[in-house]
Image (cartoon, rainbow, N blue to C red; front, top):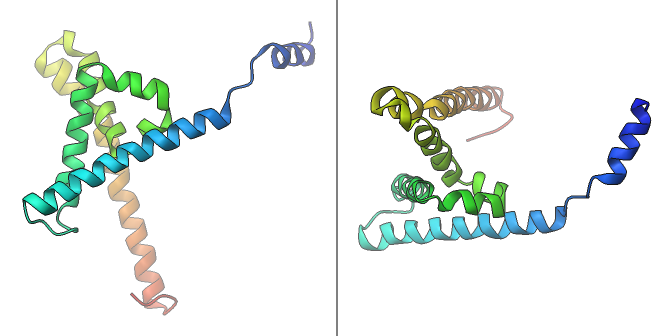
Length: 151
């Protein structure tokens, strides 16, 4: 069988993914996660007298903590299988990824297994976050200096 014939046969046999259904699930689950994040933020503003600006960091930490608890209980995997990117894109996806690496290597011990793999993903996220923030700040500085933008 030639390569073109095989590709044609594969296209005929492979079922078409339900794109619209997947997008809708990701949208609604991601929106629900963000709504929970907004509720957590309002909780900090009402009960701890934070401002909108100062409630951001504890809200992110709380959402990451919630995701880590759900991952440890095995529930976040089910959410991820149902919602796809709807559960991976919010900051809770980061918490899930960090704790999943630690759980996966727990048989290797606390220090080398859990500790060594806990920040496997976090290191690259922090690195690229800092590098991208530097370049965005540099572009902003150049645009302000030449007078294109005034901030």
